[in-house]
Amino acid sequence: MRADVLTARRVVVKVGSSSLTTAAGGLDSDRVDALVDVLARARSAGTEVVLVSSGAIAAGLAPLGLDERPRDLARQQAAACVGQGLLVARYTASFARYGLRVGQVLLTADDISRRAHYRNAYRALAQVLAMGAVPVVNENDTVATAEIRFGDNDRLAALVAHLVRADLLVLLSDVDGLYDGDPGRPESRRLREVRGRQDLTGVEIGSTGSSGVGTGGMVTKVEAARIATDAGIPVVLTAARHATDALAGRETGTFFHRTGERSADHLLWLEHASSPRGAVRLTPHAVRIIAQRRGPLLAAGVTRVDGDFVAGDPVELTDETGRVVARGLAGLDARELPRLQGHSTREVVHQDDLVRLIVPADAPAGAPVPPAPAATATPPATARVSIRIRTAEEYARAGTGGDRPTR
Picture 1 (cartoon, one colour):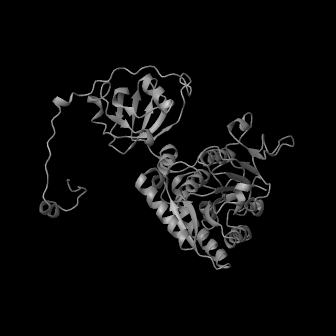
Picture 2 (picture 1 turned 90 degrees about the vertical axis):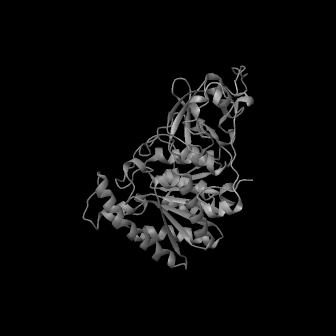
Picture 3 (picture 1 turned 180 degrees about the horizontal axis):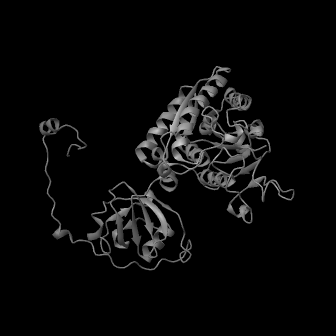
């Protein structure tokens, strides 16, 4: 028995298109009901469930007379427009057999990559759960364009798992786990546990699905598992027909152990879902400081600024070759940095708003950090500050407009 599964009180379950549809492309009512039976039992046992369900495009193929998933975006959007309603209607009817309500939540990558939208999505999902409904999450394929798509619901499920602070992520597919080779070959072996990236060395991971109605493959599921486990969320990957065993904690599929600790929401968003608005190139010394988590990024460590970002925007931090080594939330506007870079002690990125993406080979953890070049702060005597203090009456007449009262 898997202890992390048995103690999970909030679970995100992702199911792929191939596990919900018929060979002709329409929804398979028996498959939907079988999945709902499992999730309803989990709910009755006191577990909160968030369902991330593919299948909108696949459900819309047959009604529109399409024999296969279209390749062009416009017809994919049309199929999603028709199929999403059919998908949610089927879930609504199936969960109603147990007296459970369903809440539809459609997201685009923009809703995750923009910090304000990210918070709004959390509040919506949290409220749906608090009111006893089952959130059914899907990518908003009707309006999502090629530039702003998640690409697959596996990655979406991993981000949603962190968003709702889930205790477990279950990825259901038409394959009963991760194999060290092609599952169709008799010599391939199913991996029962993955404790870290070292366990995936030499494993052949397929990049496409076999059903023809989905968008992902095993590679997207492994990537989703990495996102979740790095954030302290264990993952079970198995076939939809084994969903009961997966949620009961029995040995089935592949179990990915957590490899990291649950991080702050804004750090996971920053690493996996944000859209950088610019880039800041660093000195070798600044790269070492970041690699060893020794402090914030100061303007003295900046050699170049690209993009038109403002304070609070996500930016990429690169070494002298342009390789991205970290991502952070800018503390200064792009227009301010050029006059400060190379000499000022002004903080560009606070260490609590920074995630490392690559640890430079020449700066292992614990390696000594050479002294930084002397930073030349602007002498206080040359600084001139003008303060305008509003009266309470002036502030009231001005309205809020984003301003705050001056103390």
